[in-house]
Image (tube, rainbow, N blue to C red):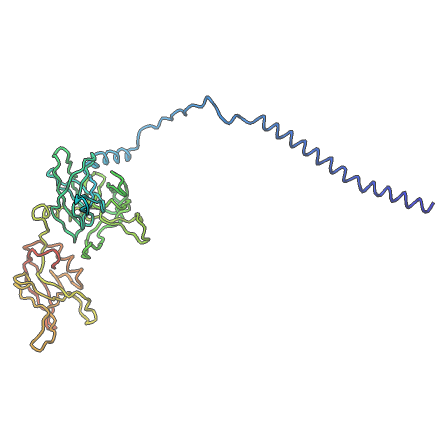
Length: 391
C-alpha cells in the first residue's frame, strides 16, 4: 500500500504538468486561424489599385488676382523689354585653320538707355572683353562696341546697331528721395536664365562699397531682392517701373555662387550723371586736384589727412601752389602738403577726399585746407578734368 500510493501519485502529477502545454498549443492554433480569417476579410474589402474611370479634377475658380500681383505683372510686362543679356567674349584663332572664333567668358545683364542703341551695364561684366554681344528681349543677338566705361563707379556703355523699333529705353527715376522699406524689383539674367524677376525692399541707403579699382562707390542702395550671378548690370526698379539703381554686387561671405539676401545697386542719380559723359566723351570728366598721393598709410607719423606725393604739371594743384613730397639738396625727404579739409569738410584719408570730390564738378572752385610746416593754410583751387585714376 505504501509503495503503490506514491507511484500512483507521481502519475497524476505528470498528467497535471502536461495539461497547460496542450492548452497553450490549442490557443496558438486558434489565434493563427483568427488572423488568417481577418487577413482574408481585409483583403476582400480593399479597393482596386487602378481605376479605369479616373478623370482630371474639376478646376476650382480662383477669382481675380490681388492688386499687388496685377501691378507686379504689369511692371514686368512693361519693363522687361528694356532689359538685355550681355555676353563677354574672348577672340581666339585656330592654330591650324587660322579661323577666328569667339568664346564666351562671362555674362551679365544690362538695359536699353536710348533709341540710339546705347546699352548700360556694369564695367566688371565687360572687363577684359575682346568683344561683346548684346541679346535683346526678343532674343535677337547684336554685336556691341564699347562706347566708354567708368570703372570707379562700375559702369559701362555699349552700342549696338539695332533698329529703333527694337529698342525700348528704360524709364528713369531718382534715388535721392528713396526710403528704407520701399518695394523694389530686379530684372536680369541670373545663371543665364533669361528675363528673371525678383522682388524685395530697400534694406538700407547711403552704403559705400569698393569698385573694382578700389575707389569707393557711395550712396549705394542696399536691397534684399535676390541678386545672383548674371544679375550684374541689370536694373533695380521702383514700384512705378522706373530705374532707381544698377545692380552691381552681392554680399557673399560663404564663398558660394549665390545671393545671401544682401545686394547692392549704384544709385540712378549717379548713373544719370555719368552715362551722358560716357556717351559724349567715352570717359567721365572727373573733377580733380591734379595730384598723386602717398600710397601707404602714414598714421605712424601721427598724420591725419592726404599727403601729396606729386603735383601734376599745369594741373589745378600746381596752379594753386600746392607742394609735393620732394628731396632737398642734401637728399633728405621733405614731406609735401597734407590736405586736411575740402570746403570745410574734414579729410582724414583718401576715401574722404574721393567722396568729397565726387560731389563736385569740373570748373567748381573749392577751398582746400592744408598743413605745411606745422602751419594750417587755406587755398582756393579750380577743379579740372583729370585722368580717371588721379584725385
